[in-house]
Image 1 (cartoon, rainbow, N blue to C red):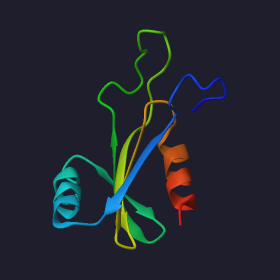
Image 2: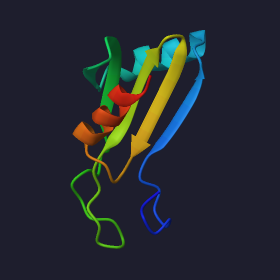
Image 3: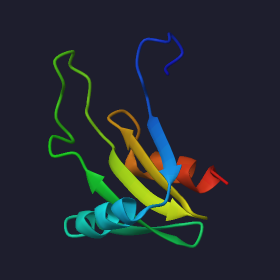
Image 4: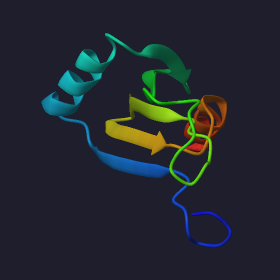
Length: 94
């Protein structure tokens, strides 16, 4: 959350790796940029409206980042953090 606890800056979901999570990652790589997260293959997709202003006049950035790490499927999303900041957060996760 932001410092005022009003805006969700980043959402992170984790679940045990399954055949479904592997399937999702494979389907996603069609339109995604492949990235390296601590030696694991990840996929980043920018939001379709990235770079536009939302209803409040705030810039939309970020996107959806998915990867499997040590048997855990991780999905991260943000409309407020940049791709690079999302990757920095992802790489800090152990």
